[in-house]
Structure formats: structure tokens, C-alpha cells
Image (tube, rainbow, N blue to C red; front, side, top):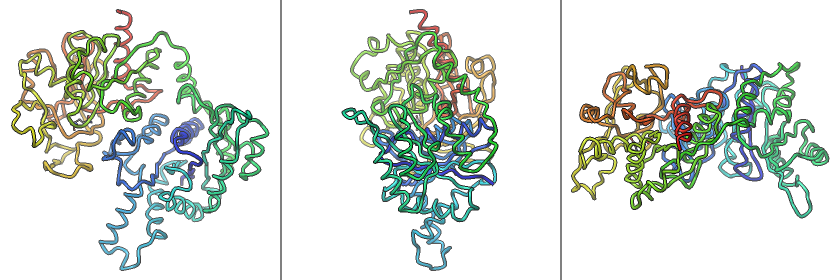
Length: 548
Ligand code: GLN
């Protein structure tokens, strides 16, 4: 039966709660334990699938096809444990489940209330798979005091009461602001935040305090005294050069020891931190730098492409180079020649995206990369745009386009849909069917699917395998009917769905490195196990940087 660690936040948001949770998961693994991490989000959206990446950052897709919060990406990158649909829940999902049960009559006509119906639903969720791991880490989104968060805080309070004493602990993350004028770290906001927690029946065992510098002994004592924790359970979380330094940094601060102490586990198993020592060594000992342009739409918010940015960093770790990423808004290339912008980069990546805006710019960027021999990685929409570019400029189909951009108001425009709306495909051994006007939530081809790679192709070489499994999130698909025509011009369909109907990978023949993939390889990359496509893409970029 698992022990439970509940992670909450206070004072301000965006303190890196997800990162602290993920790093703690990694440290417990280093001590030989199995872990699973979960996110409980108070917002009312049913899932993040339809939330704007501008506002909420990327949607992280699990193998079993759930569209989840980007924190699940951190969890996976730090622990290597594949996230599942049951690792993330929002108030919207909780209420939707409760209301569905109410309509079905499951509550036998009772009055439906937050306590116990909503809190029971949350507790049931927390319990899923509790006998599978040693530690279950549950992060509560938002900050203590938020109205939406209350049912979650109440649920974890009840949960810890129902469990045997000592099976649940609480870790609270806060901020210690530094007042430069007086040269002091202030503990008062943390005291207030803990007071707020205690008013709803929760007492933290561990305090993780974000601060610019180390926490002086005096402040540590004060925090311990006023917040009712042991001084050694006050963990300083200082700003780091790289997030991947977090496990070692938290370990030095005693986080994992404090957690094991709080559970009364003694003697604590010795940690094996070799994996993280190697990662940190690769961060600090690099040989050169490569510059990668990400030509996309959601470039104002880096979190919109979180996993891609991380996977590029991992590619850098694999090759011991620093990866410098520039975010370029593809709309610029609709009116301007991409050449002068892009020629200073060693590689170009066009990420996934939705809608027509900026796509002509992506097509122009793909053309530049193909013609100039610059390494190109097209992901999902980035692959579709590369295919449209090849159709237009290699295969003489000047009117090639995608059905995604075929709106009512442009119906009159005639074009050849080399990318079409996928409405039927095979999953395992059953057929999935979608209608054109199905609602937007969860109607895509989502989650892990197999693909077969052509022997002797570049991608087969990169993967070192011809059978792969990758995660998908798309509605549109490259039309297989254009395969022959495109292959004759040098755009090779080197990866296909097992039934041979859906193109999964294309590559340009006689190009140093030009690969488009219909799936999202970035979701499976880890710092200690960089994804082969990203590792090889950065290797090609490194080679390119030595040419210029
Ligand atoms: N909009 C495209 C599709 O639905 C690409 C999706 C993506 O890039 N994730 O097929």
C-alpha cells in the first residue's frame, strides 16, 4: 500500500511546485522506491485539451490518450514513469463525474453536496492504483486560499484521517521574498500561508521555501517555530541554472531525508544519484553551442512548447552541446523572405499547432531548410507543412493544401488536399470513427500508436529499430494517395501505421537531416534518456555548426 505525499503551494503561484514534486519523485526512486505522481487541478475545464496554449501552456498527452496538464510532463521527465489518464484530474472532471452519477440515479435521490459527494469523488481518484507503488505524490494546483481549491484541500484532509496514522504527509511550497533595502528574507508571507492551511485542518510536515539565496539559520529557526515544523524540514529551494539540477540540489538540502523522517522510515535506504550526477555533469561540461529556431505560432509563451524545449535540451545533453533556442513567429515569413532570419541557425524545428494562421510562414521555413540543407525537424503540423511544401515545390502541385484550413468562407478556393481530415482509423484491433462536426474535446487521434519504419531509412537508423511506439494528438493526416508522386521527387514515406494507411514519418532523400513526424516524440524524451530523434537532430545541428 502506498504512502501519500500531498504537495500544496502558498504565497504566490508559479513557484515550481510541479518541479519540486517531480524532483522529490526522482529522489525517492534514487532510494530504491517506486513512485507515481498525480496532479489535482482546481480549474473548471474538464481537461486541458481545449485550453489555449497561450494561457495554459502545452497539453501533455499520455500513452492512454489523455490530454493533461504540462506538469505531468515534468513528472515523466524526472521519473521516467509514463503518466496515465488517471494521473490528472480537474474540478471540471470531478463535477462532471458527480453530475453524471446524479443523472444516472446512483445517489438514490440524495441531495448532492460538496461534502461528501465531491470530496468522495476526489478521494476515489487519489486512491486509484494505491497498491502499485511505494509512494504516491499528489500535487494540488493553485495556491492555498483559492476558492476553487477548497474541495481538494478538504478531500486530502479527510483522506489523511481515514488512512492509518503516518501514511500521509504534507509538503507546502512558499516564497521567502528578499527585501533588498533591509537585506532581509521575509518569513511572514510563509507564516500566513501556513496559518491559512491550518485553518482548514492541514498541517505541513515539510516546508519548501523558494528564495534567491540560502536561508540563514535565524530565519530557518523562525520558520520552524512559527510554522510548527522541524528546522531540518525547512528546505531551501534556490534558483538554479537548470531545472535538472533540482534533484541533487534538493537532496543536498535534505528534502528526501526529511520526507523519510516524516514517515518515520529508519534507517533510510542510501540514495544512488548517479543518473542525476551524470545529467548535471553534461549540463556543466559542454563543448560548443548550437542555435535552433523554433518556427511556430505560440511563441510568446515558452510553456506552450514546454516538452519540445526540454527535448532539445536533452538532445544537447546527449551531444554535450549547449542548445540555444530562438522562438520565431512564423507569421513573419508570410510577408518576408525567411533566408535572412534563418541562415544564422544550425537547425530549424517547426512544432505542432492548430489552425491556419502562420502556416504559410511554416511552409516557407520548411522550403528554406530543404533547399539550403539545414537540419529540419517537423512535428505534427510541422510534418504536414513540410509535405505541403514538397508537394508544391518538388512535385509540381502548386495548389497543395490542408483540409484544416478549408473554412466555409474560403470554400470557393480550389486546392488539392494533401492533408485531409481523418475520420476513421484503427486502434489496436478496433476501428475508431469521428464525424466532421464532433465537439472539440477529445475527438482527435490521441495517445500511443505503433509505427513501422522502412529498413535502411534515415529514421530506422536514428531509432536503431524498425518498430516504434509514439504519442499522437491530431485530427488531420497526410494523404497516402500522394505517396508515389512525392517519393518519385525524393520525399520518402519512411514510417507508416502498421496497416500501411497512415503516413507517420517523411524524410527528404539526399538531405543532411530532414525529418517530419506525425507524432510528438518530445513527450517521451528524458534528460537521462534523450529521445533518439532529438539526440540525432542536435548531432546534425552540431555538425552543421562546424561547417559554418
Ligand atoms: N492541426 C493538425 C492536426 O490536427 C496538427 C496537430 C498538431 O500539430 N498537434 O492534424
